[in-house]
Image (cartoon, rainbow, N blue to C red; front, top):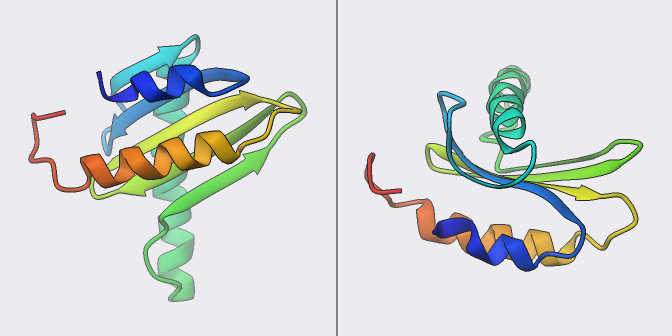
Length: 112
């Protein structure tokens, strides 16, 4: 499974690999399906803003809420992302996501 490395991230609540359609290809933890759908939706919205601003393709998204930190990386047609409990260092998740993004960028459809 592609996301096995995320299981070792301290404080992880959920991890996802999702395509542009918002359907999860693989999930780790609880809430993965919801995270997958929302990350795909956020990617679409942020892409519109980025296009209008002439900023180029969005490759990384991170935000903090009261209880979690969400970090996601866009790689080709896919997004890999995590939800981590607040108070945990996000660097291990960011490193794991960066490695995963390199692995999935060149995958033809149907090979994930």
